[in-house]
Length: 317
Length: 78
Image (tube, rainbow over all chains, first blue to last red):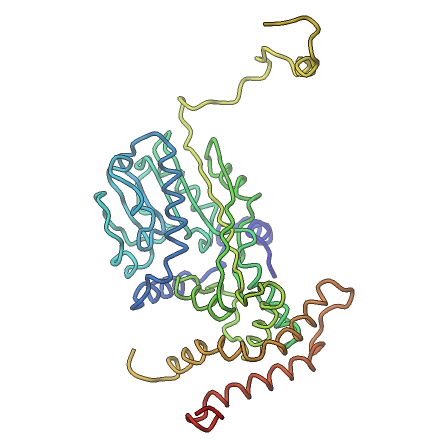
């Protein structure tokens, strides 16, 4: 039951009315997670990914007058940025509780309560758009990427990070095997993720140039399957797909714990959970950007390559 | 949250799950191996294929829970 996002697009005939996730539920889950008394203990993954996205922003030797953070949560990216790089920042999220608890940063910040799929901004307004770990709950990802492309100024850049591919495969497989053995069938408990191969296509279709996509595997160790699930819930990452089964039998949980430990556990008893983070960078086209060379403008031939490897007899200085 | 209710009691049980589960490591490993064997072998995983191992695991788990819930002194410890 682990169809990736693109195959679901094809199944639904590429219509604009893709509805995989219950966005109201996701907002309630995020509000709940943000309101937890000791909610900071669940921020480790977002902080880590936020710092890596900020690294990528620093790699671009520019100052961005106006930046937008989509699905900002408690604003994990901006705590690693400085005013020299980003002059003004706008945060959006569906969860009001998360935005209220955003971390302090010297950058002048404003918050907008908005759904990532319906950005309330004018075209060509932002120099930089960032997003960290929130795009994987979007129903219409191609549409959202197009909107991001629209709100960017020409020669603006979008830097995003989302979980994808094989994230939480250990949890998914353990639950699947346990449910099959205990109940005779299984239903999806881990939401479908975008494969890294589809990401390039999606960005290209949205109109981005000069794409960079790379993967980072983050593996976190937990005492057991219960802690994995409780931490995911504390992060606001509980499942909210429409086709989720709301009940998990006690027997199945016990069975899944045993399978998880046996198949993936290490000698000291800890079990790993893998988060495959996909980082993407895309630019809005502008005349100043390098373009592919025109056909027929080559000045050297591929045939010359073979002559490079052959050693020459005469002594060349 | 207002005092003790079904939700808080269940969360408490979930927090204790790993500790109790660790007392049944052998049974869990046996069940896990039985299920994991189907991913490598030719036999497909079906309902109740590893029912025997699971019964042993569940009995061990239920026993460990009841021992934990006994008032102090009655579970053999002083």
